Length: 491
Ligand code: 5AD
Ligand code: SF4
Image (cartoon, rainbow, N blue to C red; front, top):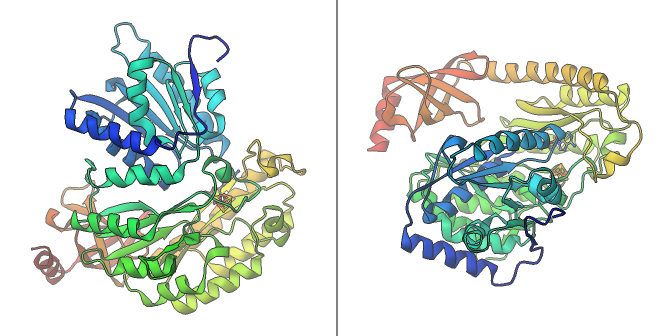
């Protein structure tokens, strides 16, 4: 730090005993049960961040931190940030401005502010310079050290920057908090199985912010899933930046890929639905495709980003496959699981994208047909190869292409939903709806479903007749016998 008011401790190489230390400090704190304090965790970006935020809450609970929805009410505020596009990153700085006013209000009790996640990793020193109000900067592979940092801060006072990549140590520490987790997960839960990315798509910051691909051991994942099932979780979604690159020893039974892992999870009693996200077309192997076809607990929904339909752009993006490869892959997946709902990610206006290149994306979408999709204007990310390429499209060209692509994708989404009207689908109900007596759940295809039914069916899988669609959901009706059967199953 230039102003010398703070000590900036850069621990790029955490000591080998870091994991043990963090565990020990969490354990000691649990034994002491200090007086109640409040933490406000605000999450930006992907499901991996949602998962990480839950684990931070779990790590902080033994230190006496209860969660609060309001930053105004908190002793500790954690911003778990996203760096994927410029807009996401800029939001963090405006939120820090708001937090500063709260923290520095006259008479305010002391408040600590931590910036975690991918902005912390990518812009740690810049955050320290731009926002002196921040106390801790923690990368996505270092947040397991939060309890230790808080303890250290109480002794040493100073700003801390933690941006190491000790993923294995993180998995090791987190292993111990899963069982003690204070948060009630409800009937669905995320489980991180893989982190990081070695693909280096030329637009993407993830390989720099999350580091290299690392898989969690199969035995640890199965153990966590069993524990979740014991707590009443019916559906798990396996998370990874490249989830289908997951590989591990399968409980001493030789090398496993994601297909084998899903089959092993399917054998856990009480766990009825398995999903995984996000997959890469290059890692979609035969074992996983076969599992999708054969394992009924594996839900018929696949998020398989393609990004673009032009071979020239796919090459410039370093995606490692062409459009034809993707289309043939989808054919094989549909041969194995004909009803699969496909979802994708798209980027328009990548450097060098011509009108003809963009139309190739529209052609691919027409050929494949998607049940849902996420689409974005290319955002120039400093430090990525794409940022240095020539031919950046003007903003209005990107906006126009995005509008045209989204119109087509929306047409396909609406058609997919309409095609489920008249079918009877098993729905896992997750929570009450906005209207009295209404429940909200998900179909196997991840569509939200609204239906009237007794509150006791939350956490149950019920056969529902799909009778209509609303802009963002399906409208369903439960037959009396379906309610009775589900209630009997729940008893
Ligand atoms: N600009 C726009 N979209 C991006 N994505 C990743 N990086 C960028 C970027 N620089 C999108 C991709 C990816 C999703 C998570 O975010 O479509 O699959
Ligand atoms: Fe980013 Fe590409 Fe890795 Fe996905 S596969 S996280 S888009 S670099």
